[in-house]
Length: 375
Ligand code: GTP
Ligand code: MG
Image 1 (cartoon, rainbow, N blue to C red):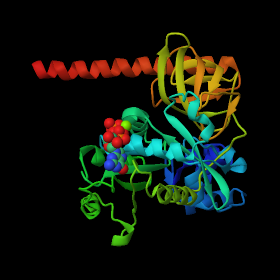
Image 2 (cartoon, rainbow, N blue to C red):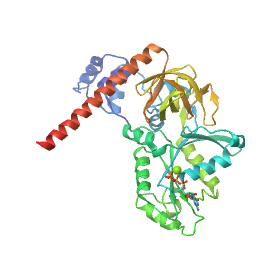
Image 3 (tube, helix red, strand yellow):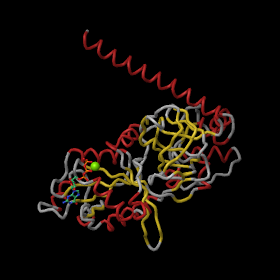
């Protein structure tokens, strides 16, 4: 159970803190507003003050109320597609894997069209006669992923760790594992290039045990699927596992609210101005919405999906290219839609003040270090 402070409890009960402190005092507990109360004490106080205490299933709450999902969303949650990031060492076959998945699964009609590089691909998978959507993230250098990690939030729901069977665990494999771990993202291992001469599946399994990834058939809990991205072998099994893990993860969002999410990548286009790919993590983004991304103000002028088509709106887990920003945000920045221009502007201003402050502090800190170094 989660502990909470006197102040938080008072806020929850919509009562002055003094009421809570008084009640505690009567029960023989001396407390100030910053005092942490365990859940039993908090319940006792609430009951004393005439509240009916309802025990909420804590695990599901913890899962659902993340940085992107607010308490107000809980009533309106709907299933959303999983966001899957493909990670792994250089040349182990990440792009080939994504290409094969897309080639076999993306609507055939796309072949002649121009595919927009927005760093994310929507793929429709058929599973138990039901079409399920999966969003694959292809972030170069996993910039957004790294930025997310620094902030402790999650941009991806599942990581596919690609390890080439003829090369084994390499430095970036290890790095990918630690990124996924830090973000508390479940890892599915795709042991790739099984069609190759020198493929050694068991060697890969063995090496991965050193990083606490133990294959299911070795008595562990990590799903490992041998595949050949090049030949398209066993990809169905891999995708099946993706859907399975997604189901266990129980992913939800509230599509009926203003959007928020994360900037996957952004750049300045000579003709179109600032262009950013947004991953929508909650709510629905619409053309005409006013938003703040990092400290950048914007009004959505147009949205383009991964097939290069203009769309009017995009819901949870979808990624779209957005035009209409006043400047280029950074990969990993969060964005949020605001109901009116005025509050958006004031948030943007606050954020850029904050950023300036942080930069100043960082500059001062590094100066102090260098001064020390010379003294
Ligand atoms: P970076 O983006 O540079 O990190 O590499 P990557 O992980 O995206 O690897 P990529 O998909 O570019 O593949 C690297 C090389 O491995 C290419 O020459 C692929 O054709 C080859 N390759 C990828 N998958 C397979 C496979 O399953 N079997 C064989 N034989 N070759 C593969
Ligand atoms: Mg690649």
